[in-house]
Length: 291
Image (cartoon, rainbow, N blue to C red; front, side):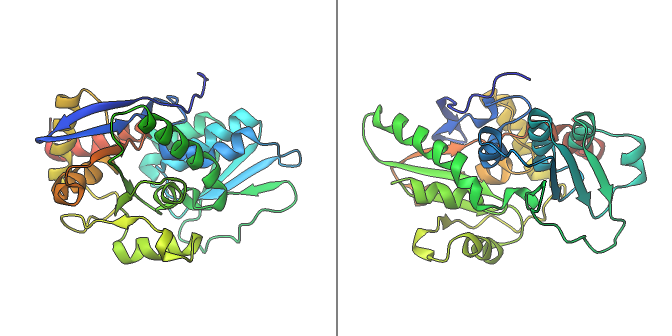
């Protein structure tokens, strides 16, 4: 395991006639990066003397699943992870985050359509809800906000806005609470109403919520979209940075299509990390569209 170093660089980028800065959270660590590393950092650096097992739930190629398998391996915990369904093909041909989590010792349990077992933190078990939708995530996200604030202090001018795509919206929400700069986001899972409800689940005061920008169309999470694939390929080619295939293309597209919202502000885009999950998504895209 390489060193986990949170204070990632911010660098200039240019794409589709749009200048922006990018916070390179893909560089935290090859195995523990992006917003998941931020969300789970609390569990990495604090003491949990009674915990012996980490338990969670979600999809069978989740970035969060893989990151938690890394966390559990570092901490010496068992890791039990529940999925609604795992195809027989994936079981016989493990790849991507699923394969990585297994290699880290995860016990991945296929519920086969049965109701999810009641999961909670108790005794020697630590339960982390799907995707890291937890108050404890604010610990690592505050560090992200502090890094951004310190970097801005070294720049000429103070006119900055922050943008990142959202699943549960946890990272965007806590960022806005810790930053004195506007935070913008867009929904990659569900729609704007879903994202607002997720914000409310962690913070009842809507004045503390980030601003939600509309995507060009409603994307169904995990579904293949040729326009997003072509955008990802162009991003990779022109910026020489590998982006996450699931979240970043929607985020970059939404950011550029809403350039009027940002006006003459300097925009900092936060890379979503989780590049290990690209393996399976890119295989699916290549089978369907080539390249």
